Length: 251
Length: 251
DNA sequence: CGCAGTATGTGCGTTAGCGCACATACTGCA
DNA sequence: TGCAGTATGTGCGCTAACGCACATACTGCG
Image (cartoon, rainbow over all chains, first blue to last red; front, side, top):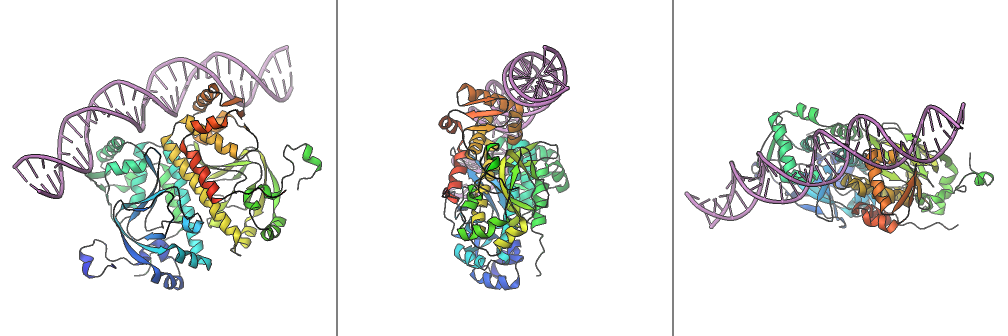
């Protein structure tokens, strides 16, 4: 199941090492050597549900090149994204927080790969209460900031601004300037009408900020996108960078 | 500075023990005995700001009978409440999360008292990595749930429902069925217009669910209030109870 | 090729909440 | 007692977003 050089021509991303995940990459060699043998590289196909609201989590996931959305699904089926996780973070903080489950659902929003680790293995490592715990706590705070800002943005900003925020957050977690995502899906994430996204996207297109067609979006002018965005993106970005300064691992 | 029997006639709440805070009360006697000598009982007057966005936190606060709001203040001055903390929790999770500061502001929303602990003392205790850490982590998860639900509620529910949610969350953190709070203040918390709150409150009044007058609100019919509320309150309440089952400490 | 399924565009009436202006009413203090 | 400050009530035009209906357009497959 592990990728190989042979199929690297088929798969856009060459078999990615665990260190492509920023959290895993930030660990000392000692901890990496202790942990990595227990980790399994798994495909993350679009729309895969990692866990449902209330599920007892078995694994934590460390994305290398995919994006996962945490979203809450209401009783009437409507949904709203709480936060986004890419290779800067992990899915399953409830496992070390102690709750073992959450009220949200985790869905793959952009296909790719991740490394997963059995919950118990994670806890074993945490019981040594060293750097992994502290790293995860800092990440949790970044995630909390993102959630808080989502709440603020939902209250105060219009669809155009929110779409900008969403695009920027997604873009930061991908290589390149292209993302695969229908307007319908974006609407579910933002918790708004599909038509609302169509109109907002149309305006961004008119401003030559993005290009899109049937589930493919290309950002043409990122500075302009940031300029059109509300402050929420910058708040989250700044705080995440502060909490988790990322140093690209040596190749 | 510690309260005494003598002034208990002046202060509505009799000098409250640390264990009136659920987190502190949940600790084993060993940890309590180690920690409590370092804690200081401090008054929490209305509108006191415990920390501003970006401030380096010096203390963590454990409310015994006050309510503190975490809110984000936007560049233009508008605000939105991210979550509420009463005697079920603590203020300053950023201290053990590792960030030392947050992007939000903490303001006393309902006056009372709290115990505070110097950040370094907290960390000393956490480095023993025992029950306090695990307790705080579970609490953090409850707080995260509240933030997530705030985001959802801001997106999907109308002012009436949000007012119900807010009243219920506040009520759970107070004795009795009465709270001191102007509509102006509530509007700031919910991030809506003051007039919007006036109208929503008027409707609740007409339904005989609440009574209010110049900064004093009394809940007359709590079951009805819960019925009028969106699911968000129940989600937060249920999850908090699950994560932190509260056992009233022996007197 | 033709058709079904999917993605996007558009129009239209409705509504919740906003911004603003102003009225009213209560409260504490000089 | 009167006044200033504060809290609440109300009306009105405006806008963003909604719900719905339907048009259009692209894409893959038999």
